[in-house]
Figure 1: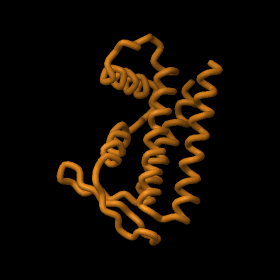
Figure 2 (figure 1 turned 180 degrees about the horizontal axis):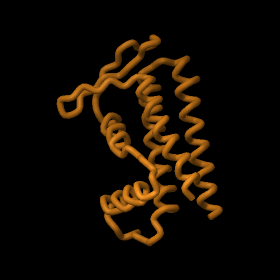
Figure 3 (figure 1 turned 45 degrees about the vertical axis):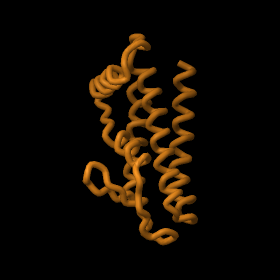
Amino acid sequence: MEEQLQAYRDLRRHLNSIEHMVYVSCKFTRTSEMLRRIMETIVAGYEQFFSLAYATMVSEDFSNASVHHKVQLLSDSLADRGITVDLSEYFLLKKLLISDFDSIGEYRKNLCIITYLDGEEYVINMQKLFEFYTSLKLASESILLHQ
């Protein structure tokens, strides 16, 4: 139980660092590299969340199970407890991080990066990153409430 509480504290610290990056760091740097760094930090936050949720909500040991099976078990466990996590956001961010992108408004207030995945255009700006952060934060807080 103490390990889970420590993992939750680590996740909270990570969420605070994302919030700092969104509200402070990016406000002063306004570079596409900073947007990518925030995306990487959000992905790492999702991975910490998944690890914590799996440890607290999946009671059986499935260490030899495939990743797909573990994701399905976690998704089912979260849904049973009424916790909604949009896994597509996590996978979208992972795809965006490995794709080529164009930067618009470097060093400007309306900075965004544009990339194309499967023929569809994605525009990532500070507002979109804040939405990703908010959904991760809500999911993380709901784990503590459902323990």
